[in-house]
Image (cartoon, rainbow, N blue to C red; front, side, top):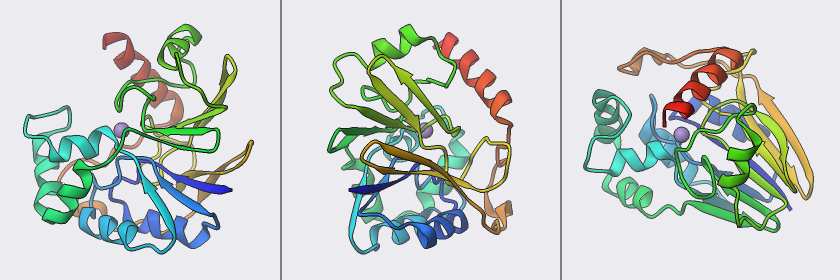
Length: 222
Ligand SMILES: [Mn+2]
């Protein structure tokens, strides 16, 4: 069974459309954080009207959009996203599960136990092992930090699918992963960016090294 893992789309419709044009899979797994970005409603509509087997899990930003209490994201950005989503989209976001398992692959947004824990390709093995304690899977696919990696932790292969809409990678493009049994392909799709000036905040950009350093610091503070 081929599964296309599309993580952290962040409302970036042109990036999503370019990836969808390339995807040839039995299942599309949307790995969370898909609406929070410049084109929330259009991204929601596109993903929920796709034909075939499309499954969703919850990201921290999807949760923050529908939560009453202020979260980590700047309120003006969350209000921009909320103002563009329908009641249907709100109910849909509230219904999302934390994880999804297909065969021996567990998909989660950040870790199997939490949608916003920070783990990177250089996080200590011991902390990773603790976060994966009790997980019965051959592969765990995560996202959240927007940088692809493929790293063994004990008997589990941990794959970060990268980010379709807001990657912190060296080359521009939309980053995602294609899985087929134990084969994992980390993919990059080129696209023509949309006009990001519609977004009411700064659109973050960083190299993988800068972003990894930032996330490791954040993780130590948590
Ligand atoms: Mn996230």
